[in-house]
Length: 88
Image (cartoon, rainbow, N blue to C red; front, side, top):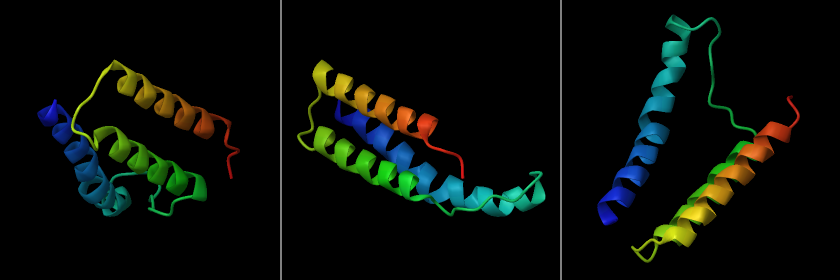
């Protein structure tokens, strides 16, 4: 279980610290419109909330089915937040 948690968290960190910033300059060359990394308050709140929840779940180094259900519930809540968030 420790290996699975390490792979999942390490992959998320790699995307956040390497892939997303590389896509910004690449968008000038490839994309129809450049992208930026300006985040809305809802995105910052969702990211912070996700890090706190992942820290709570992975803190003891063990996992069970109920913790998995809790993570799925957090995912569903964040998805509903962004679905109902007004575009602006």
